[in-house]
Image (cartoon, rainbow, N blue to C red):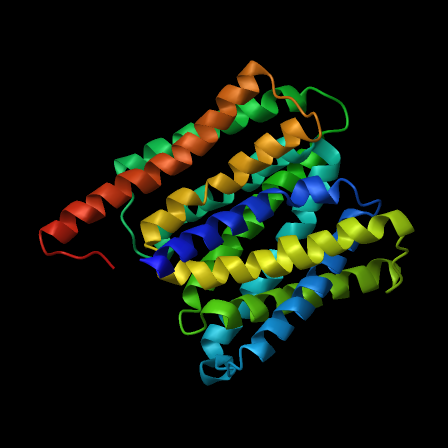
Length: 300
């Protein structure tokens, strides 16, 4: 019982840390890819130290195809973060977070083809709700000058997020902290190559940026990833899926309370449609799984 409570605490803490990424990044006077470069660098150093102290052994080399899936997932994660942080700077944390969190819905829509899961009426309704919600949230932003690139980045961050999740799910033999470390390391290499080709490996860090950079790298990324991957194994899959919506919700609350970002009534309605539509598919599927399990038909 204590272990389950600890897992809940770790998971919720991780989601709140991830939800604060945009807030912390807003205090760093660097461009988006430099922020992601420093974030992945500091985060991977932290995870390697944790992995070494835990005296675990690397197992990824035992299944080369799963490792390849994880590499693709890591590349997608690094790319997704660069698009997301660019969206933060262009259109704000709240709208960028909502665009980014359409990624899980893309996975849900693709699951019948990739994972041979059935497209239920609940998933279809949830998808339609998210689409309408995105139109509500972004309709007003599209009419404003200078937001087009930010919205494109937000959408691309969702697409690359979906690629990350799909290939991570395929790497079934690499789990927990090793999964997080390998994926974050690949993300770091991806961002390093990009920044090297774009401007070389020089990043000018101003004195006032050091604290938020360390906060983003060590706390929001390193500790956040550790808490996330060390807790999800001890929680039901349905719980992980449903509680996951605390991340974009907390991002909205933090951006309103700390940065003073505001959504119009139409955008608030759109936000509710996005989060509600995505959660509806998960909740409905959870209830169906529980009923099947009661009948002795466990859905894997």
